[in-house]
Length: 277
Image 1 (cartoon, rainbow, N blue to C red):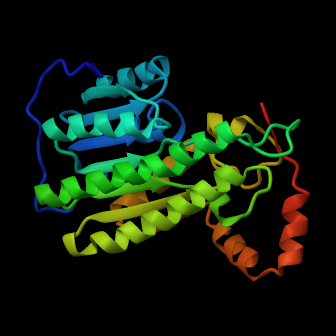
Image 2 (spheres, rainbow, N blue to C red):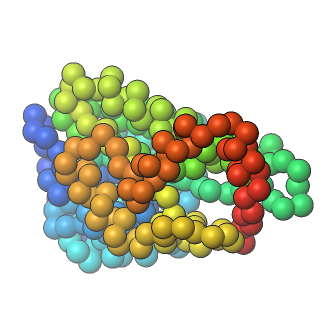
């Protein structure tokens, strides 16, 4: 862990009150080194806020840290690879033993796809994406939710999933299935936590202009600028929405996919051409 909390200010714990994006004082964000996670971290930074930023790249996370610190936040950085679920939960246990979290954004994830020369995705890629996109965020959110219950915090947990979870993508079986699983887990957890007034919001983006989407070589319909997606997510959190699909048109495409005959869906999905840098 890199601790740059120069002021060593005492944390402010918000108990017995509803938490929104701006009122939260102690915020944990995974995937804070780039993309949506980084954008939300910078947007949340303010004087007196305690930010616990998680990422794999120390170099990239340092950039986020600097921008948040310049806005007055107390910043703690954790260099953690969420593929290693055991090490991640160990670090989370240490954090929760000393700090209180009232808002969590689980934005870490990867959209890696099958390499063109391979028939199927490798076992290593399957293992990596299942842990990064599904297993570890589920374990983390479950532990954080129990922390909020124990501390009597009416907190908020935000999952970043993907519209890929709506579709059976033959070139991205691990990505689409892990995001589908994450979405179902988030919705189940939301119902389980209602009696403690702990909110869960599921964000389901399509193409957002981030480094991950730029790696894909394909048509990117309805591409949303990162700053617009960030503002939409913040509004959804503040309104305690159960879910947000970005852009809204994917709401209708989801129903078309559900109602379309199987042979038609299979034909369309099997003819999609997607490559990755």
